[in-house]
Structures are given as C-alpha cells and as structure tokens.
Length: 384
Ligand SMILES: Cc1cc2nc3c(=O)[nH]c(=O)nc-3n(C[C@H](O)[C@H](O)[C@H](O)COP(=O)(O)OP(=O)(O)OC[C@H]3O[C@@H](n4cnc5c(N)ncnc54)[C@H](O)[C@@H]3O)c2cc1C
Image (cartoon, rainbow, N blue to C red; front, side, top):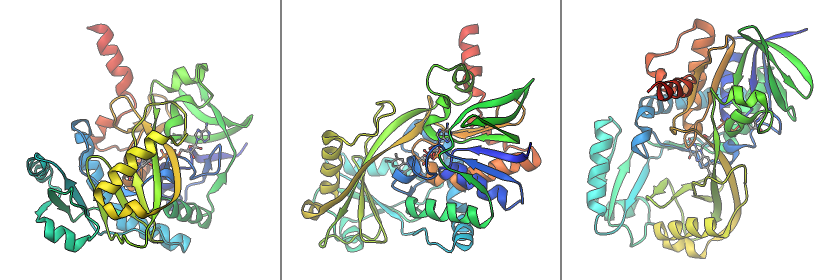
C-alpha cells in the first residue's frame, strides 16, 4: 500500500495552507475533503486580518495573530506566484467607529488596551475619518484608526490556494468523507475515507467545525477524537451589497457589525454569532441585525442592492482558542478550532505544523493551544 508522508483531513484555509507549506518541503501529501475543498467556513468569511482581541478570552491569541499578520505578505506572494491568481490582499487599515455618550471613553479604553499589546492604533477626529471614508454616518461619535490591519478576499484566496496545491502536485481528493483514523497500538497510521484505507506517516486533523464529529455524532471514534478537538459550529450570517453611492476603501467596524470592501465593488457586511448546531440557514432576524449595523455605519447603504446572503459555520471551541499541536497518539496532529480568526491565522498555523513535522518543535507559547488541554482540565476538575 502507498504510504503518504502526510494525510490532511479538511481542505479549508487551514488544511490547504498546511498542505502548501509541506508541499514546498517536497513531502508527499494527500488532502481529503468530503465536499469540494474551500466551501466551508473559509468560503463564508469576511477576510479581515485583525490581530486585536475581541474579548478578554482572546488575549492569549494576540502574539500568534500578530505573527500571522506579519507573515501574510509572503504567504500571499507564495500562493499568488504558484497559482498565477490574485487574492485581493490589501493593507489599507481599518476604522473603528464608536457611538453614543460613552463613545470617547470606549475608544480611549481600546487605544490603551491595544497599545499595551503593541498593536498600532490612533484616535482620529471625525472630520479626518470622513475625509478617509465619506460613507461614515452621523452615529459616529469617536473614531480610532488601525493602520496595520489588512484584508484578503477569502474566496479568491481559496481558489488561489487550491490552484497552488495543484501546481505543487498535491493529491486533492474531493467528495472524500473521512470516517475514522487507523491506529496501531499507540500510533496513528492513516485514515479511512469512503471505505478505503489510506496509510500515512502523519495525519493532520483540520476539518473545521466537523473535527469532533468525523463519523457522525455518537460514534465511538468521536468520543475519542473529541477529547482532542471538541469543536462546535458557531453560525455567522453575512450579506453582500452593491451601491452606486457608497465607495469604501477600507474596513469600517463598530461593536454591532462591519463592512469590508471587495475588489469587484461589492461591500460585504456581517455578522452574527449563533450557537444553533450544524444549521446554515440565513434568517430574517440575522439579516435585520446585519443591515441595521451596516446602515448605521454608512447610511447611504439604505438604497444599496442586496446581491447575496449566506451563512457559514465557524469552528468554535470551549475556550474560544484554536487547537494546535500533537495529540498523545504518535503521528496525529490537530489544527482546528480557529473560530473567528482562521483566515488570519492560516500562515502561522501552517508554519507551526511544518516546524513540528520537520523538527518536532513547538514554540513554548503554543502550550495555550495544545489539544491535550481539555482532558488535562477534566482530570484536574475530577481530582479536586
Ligand atoms: C461569517 C464568518 C465570518 C468570518 N470572518 C473572518 C474574518 O474576517 N477573518 C478571519 O480570520 N476569520 C473569519 N472567519 C473565521 C474563518 O472563516 C474560520 O476560522 C476558518 O475558515 C476555518 O478554516 P478551516 O479550514 O478550519 O475550516 P473550513 O473552512 O470549514 O474547512 C474544513 C473542511 O473540512 C471538510 N471536512 C469536514 N469533515 C470532513 C470529513 N469527515 N472528511 C473530509 N473532510 C471533511 C469540510 O468539508 C471543509 O471543507 C469567519 C467565519 C465566518 C463563518
């Protein structure tokens, strides 16, 4: 039987970026996806590359997020060169809008917090912000400028990543549902997909929100896997607008929502955070919430045409942090649970996996993201 160096489960931005990094090292890779690769959460994302924490729980992620943003230009250059396709990577920064009587105070808090984390942020007068983006509406009471932020179009990125993988002759298997892992004693020796056994020296689990439920819920396999990757889907709804009146050059964001410009003139607006299981429906309530926030940010969008609506399932985890590292089964690496930041974190994730596979090294800071943390916490709770 052919033995691959690495078999990767899941062809989203995470699995594909890992495959590209490893293909550059001339490893023999197979990438398996139960649908067409790149059609999961990665297809649904807004594509903001924003390293600032959106909650106190996200603080441990900041060093990884900053490193990934630093790697983005070279990551995109490698993808674009190998594929001959563009990703619409743009380093135009973002404007954070604050509204209401507490607006200035909230801005000061954010500025102090982000500066303490060494993330570039400046207060800007409202007139200056309106010179940068004429669409900003009267609800803006204070504005902060984040010059280091960037964006990428996740759908263009996925197309380019997959073309780059083909260029590197990575074996991509679409419509290939992985149902279990092969194990011999304490080693993972491959996987089973569509009834076929595929042997590999290393298996990387990168199946997004499905990582804890490869074989369908309630299977014995899942009881085992969910010790390492207890992912759960967090739905995010989105819509795209087209407006002759609103021309946006960079991200506008408030605590209620965001607007992200695309190369083709569309403006993407998001989003919701919903714990509703594996359900990708777009709802009236979700659309209303997004539209209210969008029109508050840029009132002239009230006349815009809605050109698309969609929803995606983010890979959430119990502590909202990604799961990155080797399992305590030899030959199994977990790379999932990137929740709201998988597009941003793809380059650094791919580098971590490559370093571990080639040198068996993980940076000390990566201990926060170990797949063993969930069973360790369970053991501590039952011992106390
Ligand atoms: C509305 C929304 C907005 C977002 N905005 C941003 C943003 O602005 N910035 C940012 O950084 N992140 C954003 N995200 C988060 C980001 O999209 C995710 O973190 C990222 O896409 C996760 O990538 P992934 O490869 O792990 O998962 P996915 O893209 O979901 O890929 C997983 C793949 O695994 C496959 N798979 C599953 N089970 C199996 C199996 N048994 N066998 C074989 N294949 C399998 C699936 O078919 C899928 O293709 C957003 C997400 C959403 C939903």
